[in-house]
Structures are given as C-alpha cells and as structure tokens.
Image 1 (tube, rainbow, N blue to C red):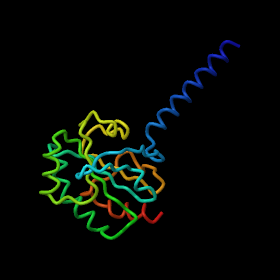
Image 2 (image 1 turned 90 degrees about the horizontal axis):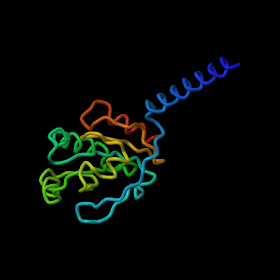
Image 3 (image 1 turned 135 degrees about the vertical axis):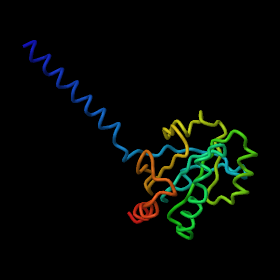
Length: 169
C-alpha cells in the first residue's frame, strides 16, 4: 500500500512538473495587462483606449543602439498600414531623460503613439510584460490577448503578413 501511495505521489509530481513546463513554454492566450503612460504632450494614454484594435508595441530607449536601428523599419511598417484603423502602433520608451526622448522622437519623425515610462528598466509596464531586454516587440489582438511573449521586430520578414492575419481574424 505504501508503495502504491509513493508511486501515485511520484506520478502526480511528474504531471505537475510537465504542466508547469508546458505553461512556461506557451506564448498564446496571455491577457495584456492595462497600463497608463504619458505621451509626448503629457497626455495620459492607456492600452484600454485601443480596445478592439490590434496593437503592436515597441519597447525601446534612445540609449539602445539596436532600438535606434529599428526606427526606419518601424516607420516603413507603419507606412504599410497607413489608413488602417484596425491597428495602432505604440512605442514605449524606458528613457529616464524625458527631454532627450522628446528630441529623438521629433528629430527621427517617429510615427505612432509615443509613450514614456521614465522609471526606466525598473518600470511596472516592463515587469508586467516580462520585458527582459530591449528592443522588445509585442502584438495584442483585438480581444486584448498577447499573441506571443515576443513578436517579430519591424525589420523581420513576415511581420506585415502576421499583422494583417491578426487584423483579419
């Protein structure tokens, strides 16, 4: 009888471990936490303002060279969806120097919704979205569900097709 109990415990522990591993590897069906941040004009903008739209988020900073290298690709991607009211592009900067951020946004003529999380890499939005490094990209579908923990960058092949597919779902 004791051997059966030990055997059942071992099976249960194994099953729980497998479930845990499975859950950690699944990217889909992650509800996107709401956030409210300031835009370049000081207006408060929330993710919930874009309910019913596909949202492509770029987490970045002006001091991040790979982030800066993505800006031309981001502008090109946004141009492909110009006039499509079903998608919004949000750029969340982790700059602590707000004036530098504003200057770069204007000089680079960045498009989309420009938001700042001046707490830097220790910000709540970074923790909520499990952003470990930047640049980091996410897609949130019309139902507020993250399609993956990490989306393709604007410069990667197939991102426009992926966004179009999500818009048309």
